Image: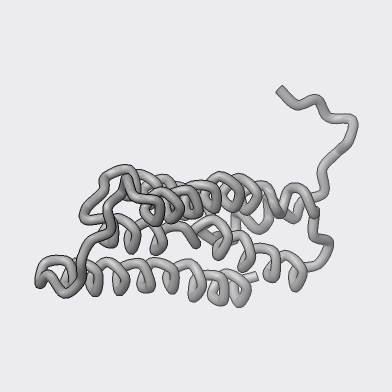
Length: 144
């Protein structure tokens, strides 16, 4: 199980590194005026916002519920699903950051990135989480 946690940590922290790289590059380009910001109220700006917002609305809940829904029986299958969960849940984090700067510092896109970051935190791979999610559930047990 420790090997699975190590593998998942590469993906988990890789997303954070990717987001920090996106943040650094976009901040540099924005602060140096190397591109013309897109008007958030223009057709292109609104379309980009809709794409990122709908991506977040679909992928974050689906990613967080993925393992519970598919109920992996083997550790290998769990590892594949956990990788998908990390990528799905945190995929809108760098997109939100990039769009924040592309739209000239449009704050609602930073909120989308923040929601993805909070959701990303809940995908942190640990041995306890793996044991809990791999444990067979008793169908007769009441849930509240």
